Image (cartoon, rainbow, N blue to C red; front, top):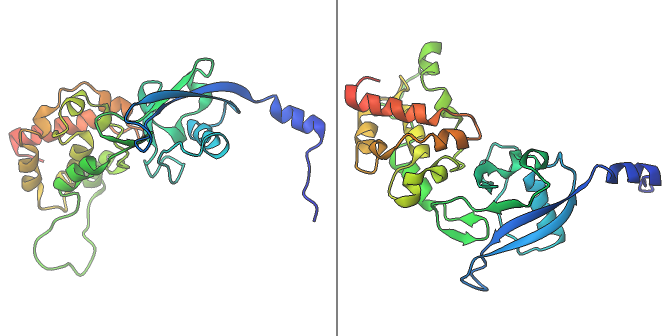
Length: 252
């Protein structure tokens, strides 16, 4: 079967939707140089497309050395978190038309984590903090023979913090984390909150003691950067405040 070909009027109509943008990308190629540079790419794109689409266009058609992470491309995996025009965002959820395409669109890696190449950072310190808060259900005794029941009210207590996709947008927007990578960071505290306030869990005291450390919740300065950066709309600062309150009152 012959491949269908758009007629000229249809092609012209499609092209009329395209705009020319400048994608300004922070480059770091350790195999070439230790210096960081900025590189501009001019490309035509539909303004309703996403920054991730623009990055794909650069990598596939202009410069195959451009390096970044992405997976699902639908705001669920969290792997394509980066700084776009100075704000932490997911590239797959950021539309070109929403970030003033008349000016250069700057794209750089998230802050506070070592850059490995271009937009890729070393996520190991972030995930180590996540592991340190024991992000799993802890119970005592024998394995139950039926599911652990929970009321809707009990579930609602920690529902917001179950939405975390571990993109690191919140943690890497925190000025305390920028200055001291030892701080657990908002994402780790959010994931501790998810289990501390779960009525089925029995390790709340242990997690609270972990977060009572000098690098724990008391390092938070309540700047709300983390809440503003969260692509899932989690009230991160509120969750951190609830953990602080639980530490003081020992009620949760």
